Length: 211
Ligand SMILES: [Zn+2]
Image 1 (cartoon, rainbow, N blue to C red):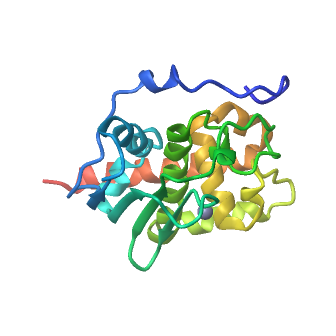
Image 2 (cartoon, rainbow, N blue to C red; image 1 turned 180 degrees about the horizontal axis):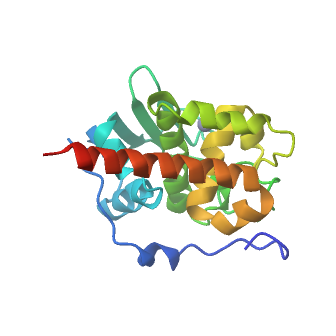
């Protein structure tokens, strides 16, 4: 774990601990464009939504489309367009954007701790889902105000850019590196915990209101 000894956690075991709900076209996302990917890689990357506990939210606030393919620059990990609700991930991301051993607070982006390209892409998927949350969930944008607290210790350089990036990067860290986030930036950890509590409440209320 990248805390005291500075090594990066191995995610491979973690993947088996969960019962996965597959992200479904027509339910969580309008259209999936995954032509550049093997089925196994696509499943692995899209599992990020389940790991981030966002499938329930996505069934109420679906993405218009997810496109996973080559983007114009290797420096781009992905992007989300609020106007269209299209989420894109880059299959051509540069080798320098994953496999990092940097410490918390000194890593370029949390996804750089992904030790393979597809692990990094899974993390970038969760990052971009954070942008979708910021646009569509009523409390997410308000929660991102936590970034302005003086004691805040952003988990990555990307998280320092502005409060949306702080929110998205904390979401990725909470999902994949919860211990590191708790130790390095308790404020970010609490922010995402509060988000999950709100999501759980809403899911509960929806179930209650169903006949
Ligand atoms: Zn971002």
